[in-house]
Image (cartoon, rainbow, N blue to C red; front, top):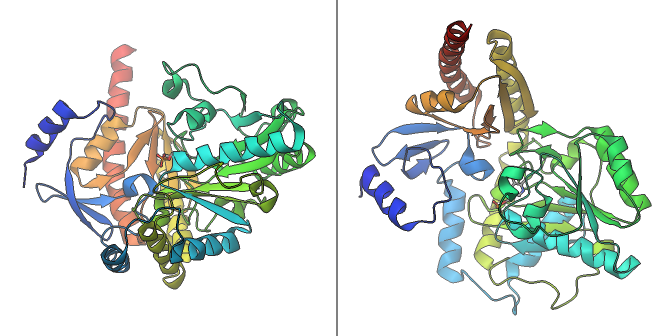
Length: 409
Ligand code: PLP
C-alpha cells in the first residue's frame, strides 16, 4: 500500500493539474464513514459530492455489481439489454415523463438535453428558435454546452468562444425572465436548487412562471436535478416539492450509487424530435450501470430512505439554524434534506481544515458556504457529531475574525 506522500507525488507528476485536492487519500469506506490510507476515520457529510447517497460498501450494491460484472459489464447500444428498458420505465413512471436517454455523467445529460431542446425548436419553429434561458449563479457542468449554460465567470474564463444562444436571468426574478422569453427561446434550463452556486432554492412562484412562459413560447422547461435530485431533498425529484412539472429533467450523481451514470428524461412532445442516429453514446446505459441504478431505486424504496432524508434533514436544518443563532459568523442556513448549507461571513476553508482534522468531511463552495451533502443513511447521532465538530471550529473562526477586526481597527 503506497503512503499518502507517495500517492500525492505520483499524481503531481503525471495528472493534469485540475484539482485542488484536500490533503487526504482514502482507500475504503463503510456506511457513512471513509477511511484514509493511514487508517483515520472520517464522518462523510459530502458523499463524493452528492454521489454516494447509500454511503459506502452497501451490501446490496456490492452484490449487484459482483453478479452483473460476472455476467455482462458493457454492451453496445447496437443491441438490447434487459435492464435499460426496465430502468427507463421506472424513472419515467416516477417522474411523469415519457422517455429516457442514459449517459455516463451529469454534463453529458445536460449536453443531450440541450440537443433535444434545440432539435425541437428547429423542428417546430425553424432555425431561429435556438435561444436558451438559464440562471445566473448556475452550474451545469464542464463540457462546452454545459459550460455555456454555467453563468459563473470563473468556470468560463479562457475557454471562449462559448456556445451561442444563451441568456441569463437572476434566480427568482419573474420580470427578468419574462423579458428574456422572446419567440426565439426554445428552452429554459435551471437547477431547482442551485448546488455549486451555494444551495439556493428557486421559489415555487418563479418555477410556475417558468412553466407558464415555456408553454406560451412552446419552449422546453428543463430541470437540472443532477445534484438535488434522486432523493436528496427527501423526494425522488426535487421538482415534486414545487408542484411544477418539467418537460425534461437531467439526473446523475447518485443514480447508480457511485457507479458513473446520468440520464435525461423527456416528455414525448420533445423526445419525438430525436430519431435514430441523432444522438448516442458508447457507454451510456450499459447493463452494469442500469442494473445498479435499478438496485439503487429499489433500496431507496424498500428501506424508506426518502422518509429518513426528510426526518434527519429536518433535524439537520434545526441544528444549522441553532448555529446561526449562536455564531455571528454563521449568517444563514439554507437547503433541505441532505442538501444543506451554512452561509458564513468569513472564508470557510479554515473551518473545513479544522473539521477534517477532527474527522468530518464536507465542502466549501463560493468561498463562504459550508456545503453539506451527507449520505441518506445518516442518523440524528451523526448530525450531532458533525455539529459538535462544526461548533468547535466556528468558535475558533469567530475568535480569529474578532481578533483580526481588533488588529485592523
Ligand atoms: N449539473 C449540476 C447541478 C451539478 O451539480 C453538476 C456537478 O456537480 C453537473 C451538472 C455536472 O455533472 P458531472 O460532474 O457528472 O458532469
